Image 1: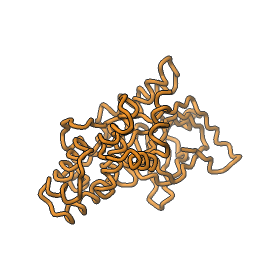
Image 2: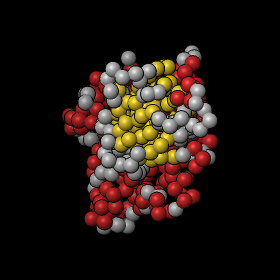
Image 3: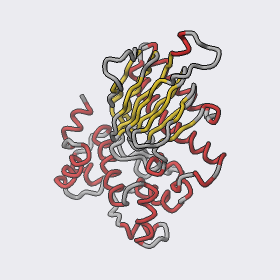
Image 4: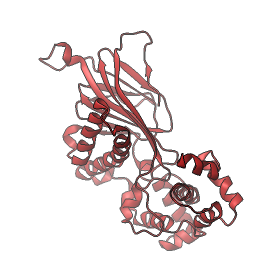
Length: 324
């Protein structure tokens, strides 16, 4: 993710305190044969994530632009206030202290200084903002993200989720202080933050109106199908077979699955198999032929071709890089 000043040469006075970039960190992934609650399947990720968070101390006037990308962007205002201006034409949002914004689908946007200082605070400190900002590289989306709005906005007073607050505080402190072990701690906190923010938004939706709750949470048939895929990635699943597992016709199942997850069943299955394969390559001593069989490929050549299509690298090279 890149940050671009709105007006090159202007006095934005942007101070980056500390930056840490994680590797491709795994989280929320079940192992073949494991038993997971159906609603937990909605938080499972196809691919390992790449998070990148920064703690920015900003002084008026300031602004930066985040270009449209495949990233899921996250901003948390720790101090001060700012405005979110989506480039897609959505309404502007004023973001205050403690508020969180998640741009789920990589929408381009601008985060800018709020030119109105708080009443009764005309001093210079009132124009300072501290923002925790960054993004997650999601090559294949979380099932739940596909059903979320482009902009998830959680105001501080509507976010009683203690897990989010604890992670935000810890992450902000780690990025500011750069203590020993931070390069291990920060990626883990980044990975935990995304599902906690999504859960907080879902809780907020449930309190306000069930109409705003994503269909993925209420569609038990799709959650059950996801569980079957995750438990047996090596099985020769067809759309018809998955439909039978949840008592749906082929066409009805395919339609509901695509609407809930964001991609057709066969595409999801292919990506999930490669996720399991990547974990086996990284964490086991199985040879390539054995890994291929564990994810439903009788041909090592066909497996290698599919893996390279998803990861951009041959499985053998991926294993060597992971071990380096």
